[in-house]
Image (cartoon, rainbow, N blue to C red; front, side):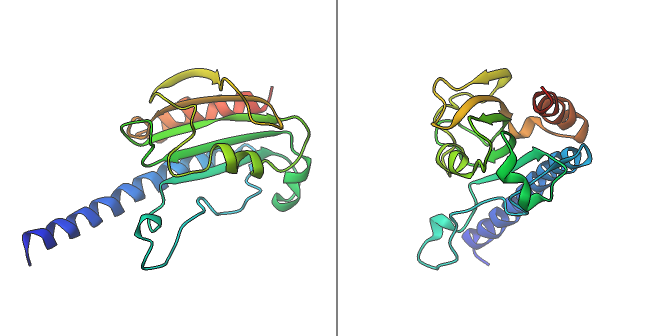
Length: 184
């Protein structure tokens, strides 16, 4: 095999391992919030806007993962219509404004209860990351300078993905703060 061929296989193997690490991170957040009574009304989907077409290689690999949560006793599909507060956890694998993968989490409150998809899709979901996230480490709650229409409040934190190394750190840094904000 050629040197280039070996490098390509090594790169794909490294990316597969990195994606496995990110999957474990997202699973840790998911399992912890679910154990506390949160549900994800969007089901198991974590990214959108991808392609399986051979002529769109820039759309083959996810550039972000997004999970949302609501605190409810309702069935997951029924929960979104009645929710005002939505928690979120995202991983941006190749953010445009930052030099490395970053995790973003927080809580947004809608002006009126309903599905947060329109706000999330416009503002948080995307390959490049959100326009307001211009630094890797946001250790205390911040709000964006301008919230999108329909959003009453928006609080977030962020850190490099590589800092979220184990479940204890994820609990302390991500899950517990989300949980406190959801229960305000």
